[in-house]
Image (cartoon, rainbow, N blue to C red; front, side, top):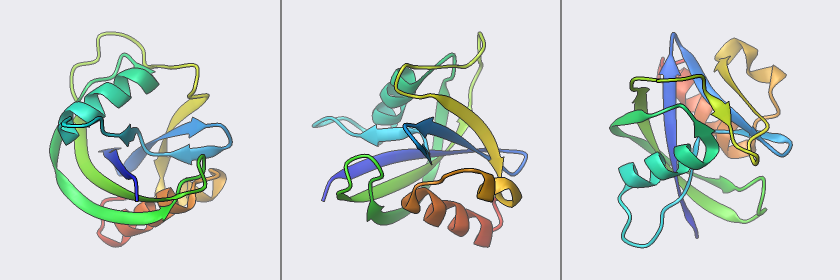
Amino acid sequence: MPLVINAAIIEDRRLLVLKKKESWILPGGKAEPSESYSSCIDRELGEELSGLRVKILKFYREFSGISPHTKSQITSRVYFAVREHVQRDIVPSAEITGFDWMSYDSAAKFNLSDITRDIADRLHRDNYL
């Protein structure tokens, strides 16, 4: 089962979500061979959004589910991260058609992937959102 590394970036009880195709997801992606989780998140964020750098704080949880894009079963390792200094506006890449800071109360307005919905629900139960 492919392993995906995701960042839960939360500010003011709002979670950063990215729109890719028709689904809203967390930043992140598959780690390259021998790549650390922190390096994977740095690389993926650089590919998905310019102008945003984060610092990984700690591991949160693992989740399993279906990828909205490949329709295959994946395991997502979610790490808490915080924004570091942002030198310019955050700009999505060509594959990312939008980004937003989602509160749990506004989650119904987003077409969250199933696994992202599970992550948001757990973050809410654990009182992060």
